Length: 154
Image 1 (tube, rainbow, N blue to C red):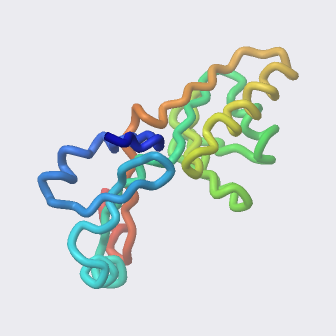
Image 2: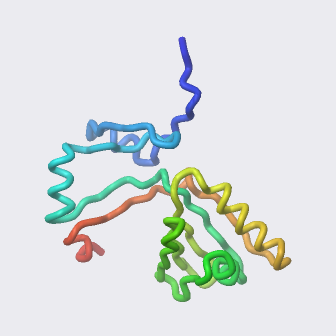
């Protein structure tokens, strides 16, 4: 028996994907949906209506602490200011969202969680302050809602 050396991290929605007979693909060590029905059907849904995608493989960092907003500003040049606000750091395909007064979610491309967390940790250390950096990549599901009718979903 030959073992595949690449780890397979299932999405938290793995059981749901299997009941839908979803075609899965290995991407950066994650088993994620490639297609639910057909590419043509899904493209049409995204162009005309709304589509839902599993993005659980995206890195998810939580920054928590009274000085977290300043750390995010130091690293990204800006920070979301009000709960619910989101900023996009286009050069790195990063989204930063303010969840509460002292808690932020950083959504990043798969596989760079450690690199980005290390940048935050270095900045926290240089400022000699207390802010927690918690990697929640495997602990949180990620969903993307897209399409012209996605605005009406809430």
